[in-house]
Image 1 (cartoon, rainbow, N blue to C red):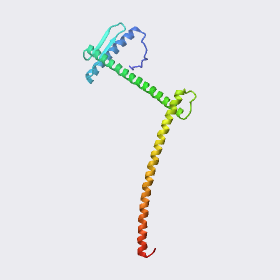
Image 2 (cartoon, rainbow, N blue to C red):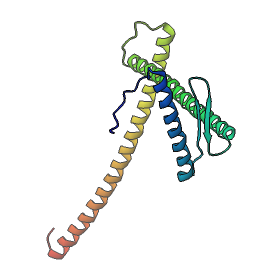
Image 3 (cartoon, rainbow, N blue to C red):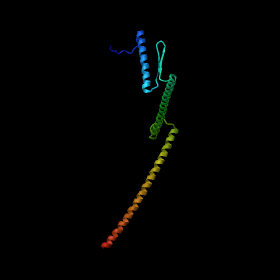
Length: 181
């Protein structure tokens, strides 16, 4: 006798359905027992029949197993909630950073003289003050660089004058030795 593949749908014949239920229930409970023994797993199976009869198997106290299940399921929900909180936090941070970027872009456009039509007098005064402060900082840095460059050039001039003096002394010595003047 060859087993045929059955289609997964409700069995319409009540007798066949009851026979299939009994056989598969027994097979399921047997597999649960084997899993608990072979793998030292805590297993609990609860089955209610169509007529509301209870069939169960548990490798240990079924109430403790159910309690453990509820505790584990609750932790899973908390983890999911933590993940949702983290996602929400990231969204808020992202929105805040996007807002800051937009403000910086508006400020930059104003510094470049663009988009000034919508500015109030106070905003224009603020932009002007910021530009004057920036210009003052730029001029101070430029002056500092010029002073440093002048100091370097003076040091180089001193070295060149010393080299010239040394060469002149050598020339005088050569002229006196060779009799050329």
